[in-house]
Length: 615
Image (tube, rainbow, N blue to C red; front, side):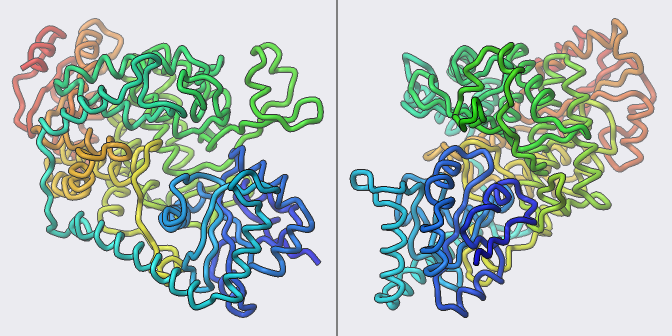
């Protein structure tokens, strides 16, 4: 009798597998207790709701009653949504790297009942393909090793777990332990960070733009680093960024409705992998030009936005057309034909961190391009996430869907990305409420308020956040939020905490930039004195205010914080403990340029402000 327990899951990915004949369990201690009682290994299958090859493996293997019967006899089967539980995914990926360098999803790892991995792989076909064994062969080999070579299995699992534990301890030691520690906090020199740009130029595809060959990813954190480096004086960064953005904009990677696909399978940016992730599009907003950013914002508004203003995680690569499930066909149709077909389904999870990234991108793009609708979208998303995922200013929920709230706890990604997004929104709207919440969230992150998954904690295999190429790091975002708070409050402990969080990642990134370019960009900001710009106006549409706002529109040099407030808002910021705004309510239609809170005389025209910013 089938015993699939995913029918009440919150995760859309898990619910996709609720009708499999496999006896799936959710991640948790109960599954490992069952494995111990039955003396079986645990098979943990990790994917996400819009993953094409996850869909393929589900149809080929997990929907097969014979495969399900084999799994029922040989393993305790656990399904994990990598979006819901990135900590579990990071630990499994670290272990899987011992077996393959072709990491991705679906990811299948086999664990002992004490949650130590002894074998791992990615997609397995139903029949052998070349040297690639079938899924049944994988299960057979794992079962044979479990039954007949248990001593070897246990030794390998212990060695892999030990390596993960040592790596996590080394990462913590290099970062100075907790944020209050006193580890080596030396940032790389500015010249060394600029040198990374030269390395990236040498890695550029001279014919089609972007880095390397196929596949081609948009890699928003790298592109944002190029923007920061260009603003910091690295001459080669700006043309490299422009060429990459132009390639993305002109290619099949950008859909007709403005949304950007996850990656292109060919070197010339053609033949996309058609799923569309919130994080790719949100990250690109922070660097895209006006037309490109407007298209992305339209996609977020029209496709990923819920009625309450929050954004869901992704749109699938597959849709059902003429009764067949096909990848990419809906996207290849002209826009006027799409309306007659069922669109690809959505991954309807609202993730705190990814929404924070979208809030940040919309706020930055809205200010840079003078687009109030982008700012309004950011505000609506912030209000929705604050209402549903926070309690008294503290993040208590990572993921929710219309079916409820996930039991998975918030991660550093949720705290860091949300705090940074709320601060950017506060700066552009002048609403101190967002900054006050961001301060609480940031301080929670700096105090180490997050809990470790109990299964990973008991196994000693919690890795912490790993370097990523597609998503801005939560750790770096937390450091970015702390840097902004230091500029707004004048409190040195936030800036010191930011340095400790980002220094080791940035130093490593000089030699191995991929996955660490976000840290390199923040390192540039932290190597300069803070520059604070406050524009006070009660009539943003007036000619004086327009001149001041135009002057700060491109004031994006690393280390610069720009706030636009009314006189009443300035008073509210000062009352909330943000000392940068003390005394700023006394005059309107003026701008203040400060360096580490030492301010020049107020600028009263755009020309005066431009001159001060250029100094």
